[in-house]
Image (tube, rainbow, N blue to C red; front, side, top):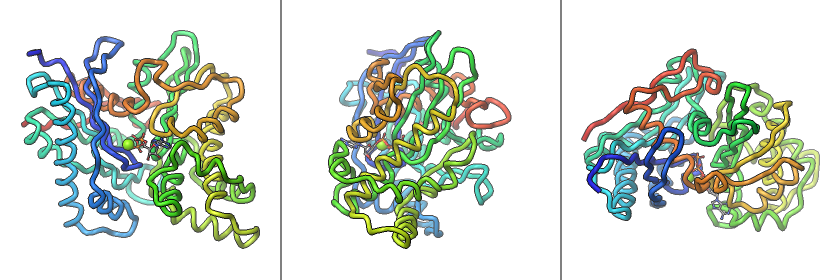
Length: 375
Ligand SMILES: Nc1ncnc2c1ncn2[C@@H]1O[C@H](COP(=O)(O)OP(=O)(O)OP(=O)(O)O)[C@@H](O)[C@H]1O
Ligand SMILES: [Mg+2]
């Protein structure tokens, strides 16, 4: 294998669970996934990232050093994948690295809009000896867009159907949908929490970073008053284009809701709160789908949330007769879709093709996304 024909995609999302790496060869409207790799993020770096995500000011020194440490980790993720697949830098056209989001403050919020992803691309280029494409979000934001979600353009190319209306539902830390309809412009937005609240609550009360298959929550009882309270979150009433992050959905916010609810109702046991969060997460997703007000034929789930059986069961109950699958049925494993999208966005950048969809992000124009960093 001597040709340069592969792109690598590196993704570490809001959940901060691990780095997903995938190697892809692109055809016109099909792709071949050569292999994937999950790269662990050491606990100490997870702690640093959690600190940087908090809305009070963090230290610039911590920001600078974690940026480099994440660059090293992204490089290691790519190199592990390459060595497992026997790929050398000669085989790689470019690596698309999303970076690790530490703040996302889009238009419509309290600040001058900005979004920060860390993981120094210079470090990744030097250590992998491959061209790196990074900083995907800010060109869209410079045009007034949300800078997110960016995966719908990829979903549109590879997952559209000529006559069926499909929804691609990614359940990462935050959940987002892409609506693919044969006779409408593609739309997509963040629906609200994905795994972020479920993970945070489970870590606090069970000591596990996530609720395996949703089993713990499934043994609890949904607290209707708390569910009503959670649904008052202002993000859920905003119209699209919209995007969100840990800034809006986090344990601090949840604690406040529990407190407010406690003033009027009985105390909820931790397991019942987990059951309520599962229902809340599913309901925020399906109410967005219902609000589209046109018939949907199929929903395909990707992201780590596809492994949460309790969440999937609740989603199934909510959507009734609409068919619910995972993207495995479309030929891409649910764990690989986001990373594959950033490999594709790297391909778009290398070829100077636009990567954003103004109908999704609200940007004034479509544009080429990302900067190129050569080794
Ligand atoms: N077996 C499982 N049972 C329940 N939940 C799981 C399981 N496996 C993974 N998850 C959930 O999936 C999450 C990771 O999903 P994923 O990597 O898609 O999210 P992410 O990194 O936030 O991605 P992105 O921001 O790109 O959407 C974990 O934090 C966990 O909540
Ligand atoms: Mg992840």
